[in-house]
Image (tube, rainbow, N blue to C red; front, side, top):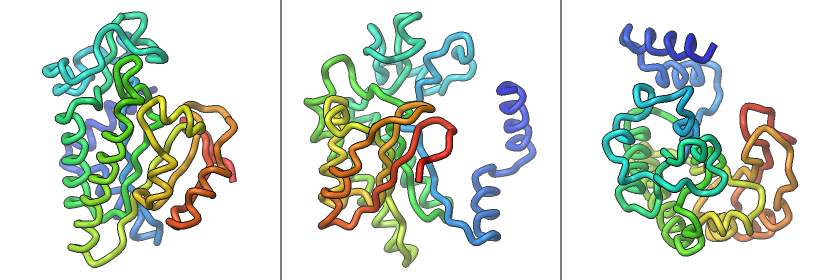
Length: 232
């Protein structure tokens, strides 16, 4: 079914359609808001039996020096089987700049209400034991993403939100390089969804998130990862 879905999607693109623009147009017709969602480090690229170089990003195949590589970090899923992790290494400036460029291009091309940066899809973001020392690096990256968004909001004369989806434990987030509590407290993000990393329920640091949002007004949501419905 997934291969068939991919074939159908390619056929739509080959026929000259901009798939995301179709979603934006339909959202406007129905009066719904729409966000452009980015999986910040999708782990499906590690699955050799499903991916292979033919389905991986050409940039990942050509620039393996930008990846987490070998040995794979803990919790890297199928990468451990093949002793190589195909996920981006956010310690590298070029990787962070690539995503900022994607945010800029997306906001320039599409009339969306905001960006969703999904860090639940998927950690790790750094090589083993390197996350904590890059906490400030990632906070600066989020601040830069907000500046990109603010510039487009000013040009379009309307509000454009920055939303982040992060793992459910703020302490665990810090070890991963993500200071979600500071992002909320300083208003770097407009919306945060604290979620499990997969399709299951988990305890979430709701009280800490709400406390951090008292001065910033950041909206706090709770959800689960994967394609399962979010909790209320």
